[in-house]
Image (tube, rainbow, N blue to C red; front, top):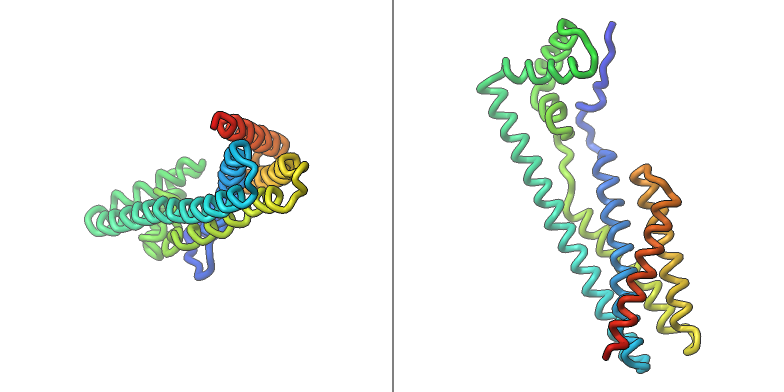
Length: 234
């Protein structure tokens, strides 16, 4: 008896793994962007003036702007993806009515690609399309789990909160560290922060942890250098 992965087409009422990972992805990107954007402004302003109040206000303003910008960007991006998924479902729903045989052939070809025989693949396709036609087709063709569209609000709030939290680290370091240690304290805070976001992103993407951490740290240091020397020009 040939077994096949029926979990891919099972419609669940709880959040799918893709939905959870998308929210986490938005959070990690938001945190990393919050850190680098805020520290960039802080270094630019700190290089141009020693007025601590001006530096703090600039940092807070940029923190808020960055958080809401990231949130709105995630909302727009995920909304577009959600609309695309819904359009694909609507298209397949129509095809099921107009060309049911073609849909069976598409699902059968999918299982043929998995190494099953033509007879077995056809039997599975016919059985699945008899029980859950739309869920089967959209999953096989697009990898969409019917009823589980990505939520733009989840991504937006995740990005908003994480960008705010990420930007707080360099802001606190620059604002409350002793005058002679503000720069070095901020550099340390940013290095630790971006290393952490690199670690989390590598875990989520099953990437190389060391490479992700080093890459984030290098980008962070370059960002601080560029903004510091730009600030010195003024």
